[in-house]
Length: 118
Image (cartoon, rainbow, N blue to C red; front, side):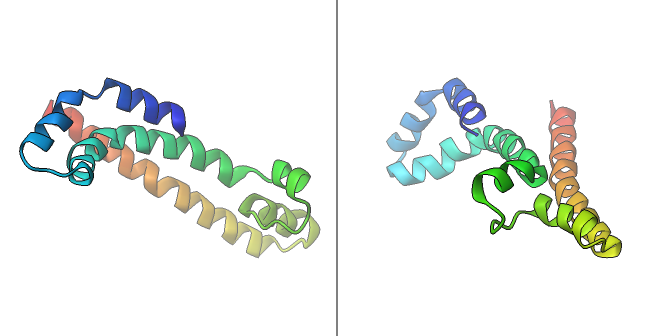
């Protein structure tokens, strides 16, 4: 998450924050009106980089946290292989797929809309 945010904020023009302060914004107001909207591509990219691997992980939490840790990947593994409850595991897998696809589709449509306006 840090690297996409850093690269986005590094490219930001600091004179925009300075101009917002000159026009009467407080530090917090300048952050929310200038810095945050300009850093949204980095926030989105970082969220994808963090969210997608976290959803599928089941080996590392099992090794590090023990068997008491509840993670979606581990729950799917247990439903498929330990409990042999194929309908429940399939429902969890489909729900996970939908949860993953919604932000990706929104991101792609937003990128396509921005490409059209350029």
